Amino acid sequence: MSEQPDGLDIATVIASTVHDMKNSLALLTQSHAQWQAQLPAELRQGREQGIIDYEFARLNGMLVQLLGLYKLGANQLPLHPAYHELEDFIEAQLARHQEVLQSRQIEARCEVDSFDLMGFFDQELLGSVVANIINNSIRYARSQLLVSAWQEGEFLVLSICDDGQGYPPSMIEQQSSYVLGLNQSSGSTGLGLYFAGRIAALHQRQGLQGRIELANGGPLGGGVFRIYLP
Image 1 (cartoon, rainbow, N blue to C red):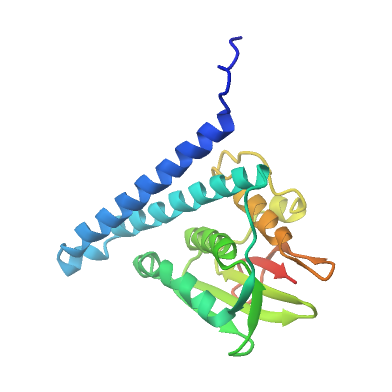
Image 2: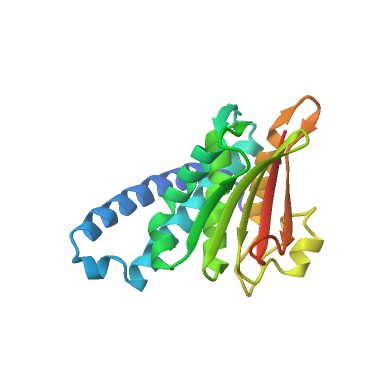
C-alpha cells in the first residue's frame, strides 16, 4: 500500500473540497433562481421546480454538516451564543424553505408559548441544525409541519413536528447513538442527527448541557425532533 505524500492531510483536503463545493452550489442556486424568475408563472411552481429546490437545500445542508463535523473534530468550531427572540428565529428558518413548502403543498406554522420568548444560543449553528431537520421533515410530511418553542424548567425547548409516518422504531430505540450506519432503504447515515447532537452539546450553562430527543406522535402525529438548550 502506498503511503500518503509528506504533508498531505486528507481530512483538510476533503474539507477544502467540500468548502469549494458549497460555494459552487450557492452560485448554482442563485443562477437557477434568476433563471426561474424569467419563467411564466405557471411553470414556476411545477413539481420539477419543487424537486430542484428541495435537493438544492438538501445538498447544502449535507455540505454544511460535513464542514461542521470537520471543524468539530479539529476543534475549530467556535460557539458565539447571544440572546435571540424565538419567534423571529423560527419564522426566518421557515422563510428559507417557503418555496419548497409551497411546491409540496405543505402548511408550516410557528408556535411560541409567549411572544417575547428568548433563547441564548449560537444563531448560525442552531440555524443549520433547524434547517436540516425542517428539510428532512418536508421529505416525510404529508401536509403539515409545526415548529414550536417553549420554556421547560431551565431549558429552552425547540420542537419540529410533521404529520408523516414518524421515525423508525430502531431510531427511537437507539437514539443515544445517532450514527446508525448507512440505511440502504433511505440512504440515511445518521450524521444529521449526530451533528445536531454535537451542536446541542456545545451549548452549556451553569452545569447544564444541551441535548436532542426523537419521538413519535406529538401534535401532528408524526415524527418529533426536540432540541433542549440551557
